[in-house]
Image 1 (spheres, one colour):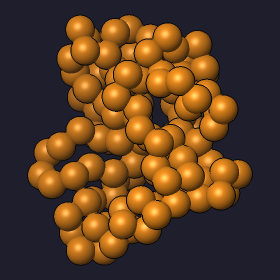
Image 2: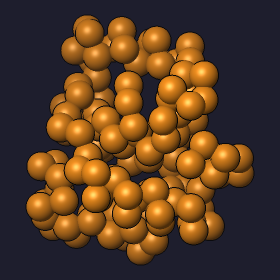
Image 3: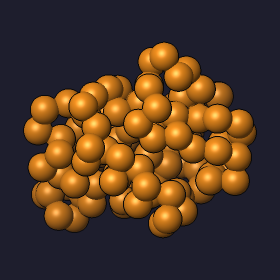
Image 4: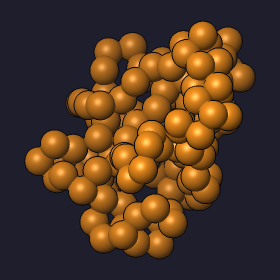
Length: 118
């Protein structure tokens, strides 16, 4: 995985975005998911149609749901992508990714320690 990569589990699951560079952190990285649920995610980072092919209408980045993917987890993730359990999607546009990362750096919902990866 690389910074900006996106993927989802199963059919129609939430889109997840890699927001930190695995190469800079011994293969570990941070992922955040996108949701239409404003109350769950808040308005720290709002995305709209055209920001990514997955997005239709108002979409929010759920920083509170962010996860740290350890190097061993990344290997399992790659295996699940190979098996079709997890599907890669188009990479996030660089300007949208920059907006997400900037919002993550200011987010109060991002779990403790994750900021070190950004």
